[in-house]
Length: 311
Ligand code: NDP
Ligand code: OXD
Image 1 (cartoon, rainbow, N blue to C red):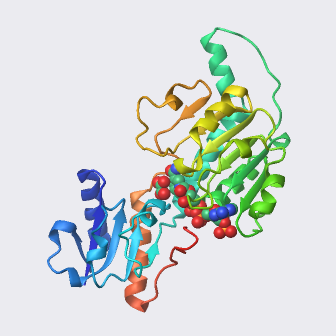
Image 2: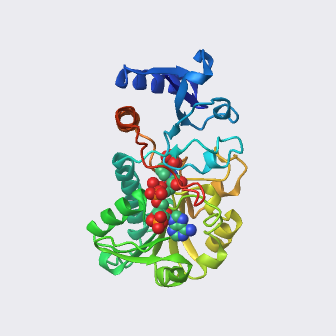
Image 3: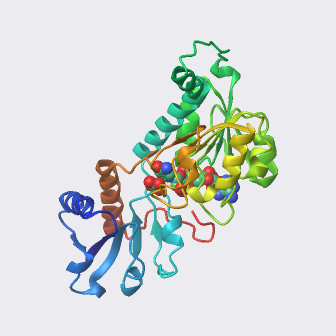
């Protein structure tokens, strides 16, 4: 049997993945699309943003391993074979990397860094109140792999942390809320809201005016989930009115973000090029290796994505 590595990442990156996977799984025949001799022999696919229409031509595909945590783009592909389960990347190193980003930018807002940067540009020596972390409420939308690791790190830093998920969770040091009925209580009084939801039909557009209006005036926003979560015009309006004081945006509906998008120029936006938690090839290859070896030994698939829920 063969494993197809299917990506649309730049060719040096694809070669890096191919070489690393081959080195880690020497017992497997791992091939690129143009090296497939017999489509019937391909029983697994490892993918990163794969071109549409290829996976559906593989009649014996048992499951698809994504090299990314978020699978919204894959699930949006109308040609994705319905009966090949999808496995997303679940990597504690990735979650730790996300937690670092969440902590970095939460601290940046907590310590009023954007204000002092702007004062420096005006040679303005002015001191402002400095609340303690224990006096701040930080809320995380999504208490999955990324959300839980981030909530725990923020809690260790001394913040009051809340989390919101579909089903009610129990996370030490985190006040947990769930479902639509829990959202308003979750939002009440938050100084910073962090989005770590997957993009699904239920969560698309959640970062909108109606959510911002439920936050105290001057709250901060971190969107590290997906661009489809934010209604760009509503983010800009909320920043212009002061409802939001600052937004750190890492993800966009169109990536790379077009140069003429007004988000680039907004003085109260910190813009990142989708780097909150990049896949770490070293640990990702180890995880894929474990998934493949365990499947070969037991025929038991790793945990798969629930397609109807969209994550
Ligand atoms: P998980 O699937 O582990 O967690 C998703 C969380 O969101 C769960 O707690 C889930 O609730 C909750 N959720 C889903 N739908 C709803 C809903 N309708 N209402 C309330 N809560 C909901 O995902 P990860 O934590 O691994 O990743 C989250 C997302 O982060 C990815 O999908 C990806 O888009 C993004 N990401 C971004 C990166 C970046 O660099 N910017 C890097 C990696 C990921 P429940 O627990 O009840 O199921
Ligand atoms: C991911 C990402 O989903 O990089 O892994 O956004």
